[in-house]
Image (cartoon, rainbow, N blue to C red; front, side, top):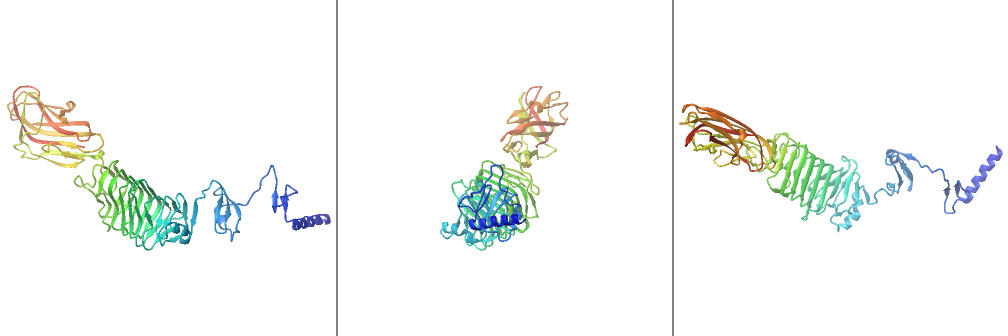
Length: 476
């Protein structure tokens, strides 16, 4: 026992004298307080979760641990924990207060926070801004949407002519706009994801961007909405507009390649409208509005109203709860003879030639969607953009004078050419006989194709007068 004590005292004296420890070596490097050598074993540092790491009280500058959640070594730099890995970005900045943006304010000439391009700015907590942010294609994100907040009590939050990415944040511009972004080259992109926009005077405006993508965004208590102008590709996914918003929620103006809005809801109570598309000049790639719930009883759509009781033109494909379905798949129309039923109208029929059933009749149309009337209102012209198959149904009540013993055929005609398979044959017994004719036909229509009813005498000769008491054609 005495020998062991003397040995330990000798080791301690050696360590105190030389202030060096060697493990696996008796000659530690003179510059090292501790040197470990092994060709078969490694050194194991403390291992812990992120929560355990963050719970360390007053960590020393340079303290090193291994984070098992991230699978990375972290060291404390006297302010915060930093990853120790070449695979991690070095273009990263933690923002805990406005003071952490001092360098960006200098870069923005003292009037704006000009962010470093391609740099990740992590927002931690409530950041009250005295100046607007120029995104400059940087990434701005929080960890907790409810607690990581960018607040501007006066003025706008984001300004300038550049895009970037904004995620996991609450945005509030109490007396200004969240977005005031405009560029003219259609090259910039803006992404907003997993965010709240609340209690702002205006959500704002975005003009001239190439791509704007908003996804999972909740809007609450905003006085006015947002205006999108001249955007190539506008994608809006799973947005929630609460009934506490006012003004017009989303307005589209100018030229677009594609507008796609899907999912989410718009609760319209006292607001002017949920969507305004009146100002769209062109929409070359089409617009899609799908599975958005409109409710609340207010005015949902301000639109061009190409067709009675509908909100959009043929550029759009719309299928949402609360508003009419508008897409080529539900295109439909009807025309009918609206003159005196007891006397009808007459149509002259020549030898063996199919002619349109029109004569001196007057016609009206109703229930037109993506169809318009053609000629004397007794033809329907398809105005949809996509070719599709339609079911056509027609009925007539007719009588032929001085044609007893002859046969007549009635057809559906497309672009003036009869569809032979649609023909319905009648036989004339006498001048007093009234025949009821029914025709059904499935056919594919392309944009601007016209559908009419034609008649042809199959037997006999000369000119006959066909009297039509009713004529009706519907298509869907």
